[in-house]
Structure formats: C-alpha cells, structure tokens
Amino acid sequence: MENKLKFWFFIMGLSQLVSAEPKFPCYFIFGDSLMDNGNNNNLNTSAKVNYLPYGIDFPQGPTGRFTNGKNIADLIGELLGFENYIPPYATARNQDVFKGVNYGSGAAGILDETGHQMGAVISLNKQLVNHRVIMSRIAALLGGEKFAKEYLSKCIYTVAMGSNDYLNNYYLPQFYSSSGQYTPEEFAVILMREYSRQLRELYKYGARKVAVYALGQLGCCPAEVALHGSNDSLCVEPINNAAKIFNSELKQLLDHLNRRFADANFIYTNTATDSYGNITVLSTPCCALSDTGHCLPEGVTCNNRDNYMFWDGFHPTEAANLLSAEKAYTEMSPLFTNLIGVE
Image (cartoon, rainbow, N blue to C red):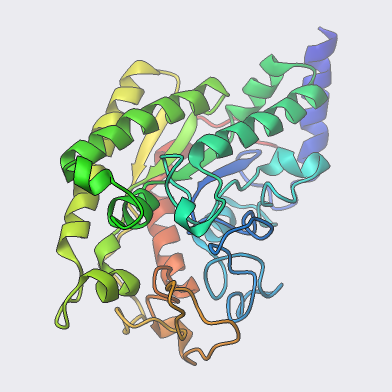
C-alpha cells in the first residue's frame, strides 16, 4: 500500500510539471537520423551533424539534428502537446526522464552491424538497453518495476527503423555481404524476425501504445540517386521496391503483435504524403554536400529552405518534416483513445 501511494502521489506531483497539459505523461522515441537529436554527438562516427549549417533554423543552433531546424520527433512532440523537446538519452537527467527520452541514433538499424562502416552507432538493440536503464531509474523513484510499467503503459512510443538496414547495409556491397546472400524478400524476412523480437521486448518493458513507422521512398534520396541512379533517374526503383517489401512485411508483423497482445496497440504509420504544400524542389538538396551525403561544414545553403524537400543527401528539411509529422500524428490517433492522462 505504501508503494502504491508513493506511486500515485508522484504522478500527481509530476502533473504540476506539465504546463502544456499533454494527454499522456511521456513520449519515448526510438529511431535513426530522422529522430536523432544529439545522441551521436560524442560518438566516434561520421554520422553526426553537430555543426553548421545543420541547425541553422533551430533556436539552439547545431544540436545533432540531421536537418536545418526541427526533426520529426520534435514536431510530433509539439503535436502531442509537450512544451519542451524530449531530451536525448545522452543528456537526459533526473526527472527529465519522466517526460520521455529520445534514443535515436544516426546510421542505426534493426541489425547491430548496420551503419558500422561510419563508426560507432546505437543500434535498436542498444537503444532498448538504454531504455531499460531509464526504466530502472523510473522504477527506483516510483517504488518498483510494477509501478514503472504501469506508468510507462500510458506513454506514447514511436519507432522508426529499417532505412539504414538498406542504405547503410544491403545497398553497400563494398562493406556488407547481405545483398549477395539474400534477395530483397529474404532480407525483409530477416529484418522482421529481429524487429519482432525487439518490439516484443519493448512490450515487455511496459509499452502499450506504439507507432511503428513505415519506410519512405529511400530510392529518391539525392545521395542514392547520385550513387545508384542514371543521369535521367528521379529515383532508384530497386531500392524503393525493397522498401515496399519491408512495409508489406511490417504490416503483417504488427497485425500479428496486435493479435498476440490484446492490451497493446501497434500502429503502422506511413508518413508519405502526396500533398507538398509550398515545397516545389523535390530532388535537389538545399545544402552543398560532402562525399558522405552530409552538408559541408559551414557550406552554402539555399535561401528558400521552406521550398525544399531535402536538406542534405538523405534527410528532409524542417518543412518536409512538418508534413510527415502531421501525417504521422493523424495515423497515430488510435493510440490517443482510452488514455489515462495527467490531469
């Protein structure tokens, strides 16, 4: 009884910290460079962007976000009602963790090997280890793992993984043997087998409201067109087709998880949209590129950034991120029902 009272008094106290009155207590983010907001900054990797012109439109300047301003995780957080950005795991401290943590890491994948040609990355498996650390902190403050899981079951989770398993694994035969060993169909099955285990582990840690992002048109990234396309290519269709295979398998996986775990909701979330708003430049990056497809440090950028789809060779501009975030938020709406909020 004492522990239960401790738990609920803590929740009541925490509600006083939530000035924006979100309908849920916390938001946890797993993913790659589309989500990373600083976790790679101190890693020995080329997959980090804590330098200008990245962050040129972000209030704090370069923070490790792979875009000119806010990334998708930031914008989803705003739509969910959070006043402050969810902190990266690398710097999350004390009671910050009760509002959520961003575990995203540039170049990370479902497979541990993915992205290693760029240096150290925080794979999804490692992100889950980090989440277990955060869960232990919460459990210590709430009086036990039972109360931590009860609290975490009210949170929103987003998982955006798989892009790098293609771009920084399967389609880099000079570094990885996967494309020589497996067809795209076979590789997607391998990814789903591992992804299934990882999502089940997240469920074991208390997650019940989980949005899992589909892959976008990876073959339309300017860096992929430059590497694999021809002069008249707008996109690399074999890469896009592989992403479609992944997405088809992902839908089946999430259907299976929803049947298996009746008290959870795993939502297939597709951020692709046919409505581009003011975006008119769809295939040219906004910044001058290095050999890695990232912006050159202190390099020139376009002036009309809100009109560009791509910031660098791989990542969207804030304007494009906003379109994706709004689409994702709409598709996540089934997660918003039957929530016990922080009143």
